[in-house]
Image (cartoon, rainbow, N blue to C red; front, side, top):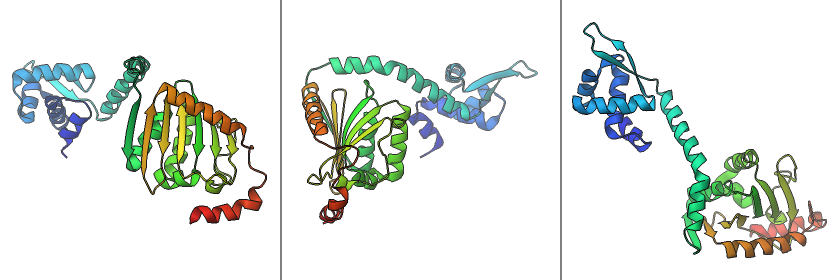
Length: 265
């Protein structure tokens, strides 16, 4: 894929991408010379220049001896600044957009995603929890396989940075000991299910959504957006939570090897 095609994909118009790249290569040049190199008409080039000037991607550096205006491209890092500014505007608008989206219909929405990238999308969405609260039923060993330990460790760091508090019930037979422990600083409260329960899937409840993440074997994720379903799952979680010991079941050592063998078969 060419550079100008990539610039178009990240938000520039085709003529803007060509003009910017031509200006970048020429250094200080007139609009006419930049237009000629970019392969666009001179009349159109002035409009393109005005738009790029407004976006901060080019600047007017003076005039030549014949009083022709000279143009220079700003450093490529300015593209990152432009994208960051657009992202900040979008972030400020997201609460209102979500409100409009949630109020558009009372019907539940189910979204299905296949593969590792889909799983990552669903996990990322949990960080948008408006009430800063996640309820989880977790299989750590499966999450360490897909989407992988490094990605999950980064996900945990981002959750903490976002101020999202997690209450989670974990499966001892599928757990990774001494990782992600109960921690006030890490906004995490942990309980463990009985060894009779072996989770191969992970689920999160947040706002009016329920996220479900499978193991590597089925390799999918989904979100169910429904106030009634989320409320029911939240109530079931609270019942489950109340029945679970914290922070580690007393019979862990006695049953650990047996449960681990069963889960590996």
